[in-house]
Length: 195
Image (cartoon, rainbow, N blue to C red; front, side, top):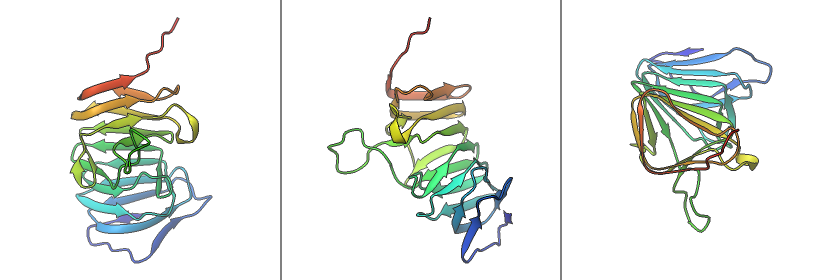
């Protein structure tokens, strides 16, 4: 399915269980989309200067998301959207609507971005926003295990800066810098020795 610059959707876009190899390409459209995806391999491409927001509350699953030339606004809370792989290329913006983690349980509000639930995020020259502003505060990649699971962040192009980068201690959490640069005020990771 392709949504061009003049496209407007009135209603829900539904990818039902059993549908395979589907792609939703947003090519230049500016809209808020109510997407309900029950398939794990849905591919979402944001190109052509698109500016799209995904509605909350659908627990939609996405196999691969590519933001190449445009802006995708979405919650990464699992009740809203479940992303498996997100790549933000140069010219793209992934705007996460709200923070989803606390650095201290005593805090009243979330103060940190958590990349977990088995998702792989790649910053390939594109921008990472939270709440419509470029994000430079604390980030945690994966957890110690349990229901929030692992996560990975790859920096493959561009320059990124965060006040703190914390790597969860569970096996499978990963921070990969393979091109581009990452600057952190504080880096916190458990180091394992291998024989």
